[in-house]
Length: 122
Image (cartoon, rainbow, N blue to C red; front, side):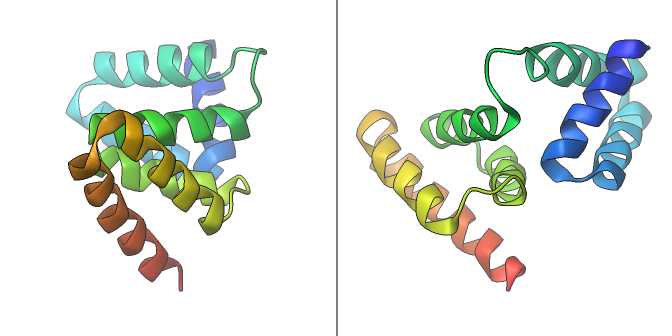
């Protein structure tokens, strides 16, 4: 259970403590074991490793999601990236840069997601 709390805390750095706890409860309703993997392993172990600060892990995650074309997760992680201090201009550059590695269709989808996130931010 310690890694789950650590994972909730780590995600809290990215999206805020209340949103992180809400996300855990949402996942737990779906399946407690899966929620424990996501929060205990993904956030409690991998995201909590000492090698990179949360802000850089956030940017790496955004880049990966752009290349993979994972719009729903990209939306959440773009919001998180803004929360930890990346600027809209920096995130645009990541999308443009990743277009050369993931292709134009995935980048165009990322632009749509970015615009949606920015519209809600205003």
